[in-house]
Structures are given as C-alpha cells and as structure tokens.
Figure 1 (tube, rainbow, N blue to C red):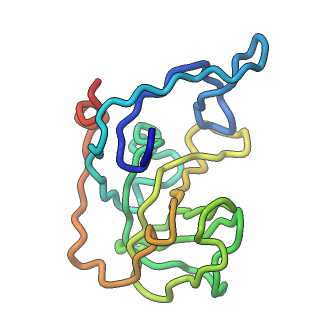
Figure 2 (figure 1 turned 90 degrees about the vertical axis):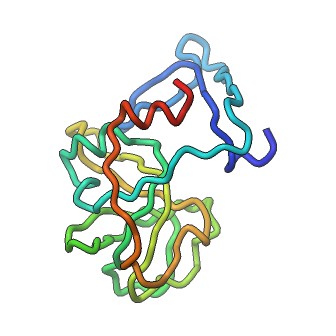
Length: 173
C-alpha cells in the first residue's frame, strides 16, 4: 500500500475483544492470518479531531465511540521523567486541568526522546487497555512518531466534538 500513513483503508476479518478494545484477530478456527485490507482513498486523511482531555476519561461515551481515530490533545506531561520509555504510560494534563493517558509504544521512534516540559500538542490514535475489567475504562492516546509530540503554545488549538455518525462519513461508509 505504500505510504500507509496517508490513506484511508478498510480492514475486514475476524474480530475479538482484548482488554476492552475490539481488534482484528487471526481466524479463531485455525489461527490463520486472513484480514483483508482495501485501499479506500489514497492520499486522503479523515479530519483530525481535537477533543478535551476530559473526553478521554474513564466511562466517557465519547471515547468509546472514537476508539481507533486519529486526534490531537493539548496540555503538558505531568512526570519527573526526562525521556520517554518503552511501553510506558504518562499522565497528560489538558488545558482544562483534566487528565488522560498517553502511552509510548516500544516500536515508535519516541523511545529515548526528551519529554517536553511545557505546553505540548500530542497527536495519536485513541486506543484502550482496561486490564480486562469494565469495558469503558483505560483509554489512552498512542502517538505514532516523534513528530506527533509538538512542544509549543496551545492557545490556537481548536476543540471540536463530532458525532460518530458525522465521522463515519469521512471514512466513506
């Protein structure tokens, strides 16, 4: 598919629940890997959402409806760490004072990068890991690359709350 970061794709296959997140999984009958990826719109990106950190909190119906969507949040990291660790969770405080979790996966180029000390715009994919408890907890934003962490003034960042129905239109459904 080439540059998969600038495409809309449809992935079909078997689904299963893992720690609160519905995922594409291998065929449960014989464990074969058989998802199908269809390229919907090369070069087209769905609109970036700018939720408040409170919308990513536990028991948020907004977060539940927007899992796997690309979004950006503004605020600062509340940590004494100076560099990002692998498979580490960080508390992120939004401009309104509410918090959410930003998770740095080991397979990103963020591991070992400096953690910004001031206001920062974080772009990532909303995911969930709830430790197999209640289904509406454990939301986390997953940045994909080092340039998904952008230190600077967040005053000009818009906030939008788009319904799932409106968002689906951006994916060609």
